[in-house]
Amino acid sequence: MNRIVILLKVLVICLMVSCSQGRTDIVEAPLFKEELIKKEVKKFSDLFKHYRLIQLETNDSCLLGGGRGVKAVKFNSSYYVLSQNAIYQFNKEGKFVKSLDKRGGGPEEYSSIFDFDVTSYKGEDELWISVPGLIRIYDVETFKLKRTVVGPQYVHQFEVINDSTIMAVTPEDTTFKILRGDGSVRKSFMKMNIS
Image (cartoon, rainbow, N blue to C red; front, side, top):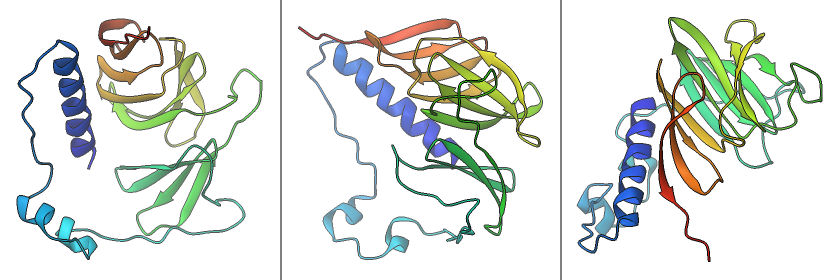
């Protein structure tokens, strides 16, 4: 699933970059089988041949919903869900395990979460969250803060590609950025032309 998300993000960046370079020979590439586009999709299985629905536990400690949106990431045998500025971890059966909910103004706290990723970085499993001004990195097992990465002022969306590459979307003049593992900008793409 992570490979599909990465592939779609790379495809969007490539399309955006090619469009910003004044190309007029745009070729439409279908995202689904042509026969699915022509007929009305009535079932989830029409789009995905192999899927599994997992009902997530609901209790006072792990109510999901509302806010800017909900994002879910599967990592190893757990599911991590961003909802209402907290990250919730569920096991493979959907049972609630724990949450990262450190809203506030203290040194290990945050005011809001823009995005998150769960990854194995330099051999260690980590939970990365984008908060105003930086990216905070937590240990996956303990949810204890390990370090922070200072990058562009705001990173609205990001994906850790490998130990030395992070793809990021920012609201700055140049929207797409490729960052190094320390948060420094390696390359910027798609300059906004707002007049």
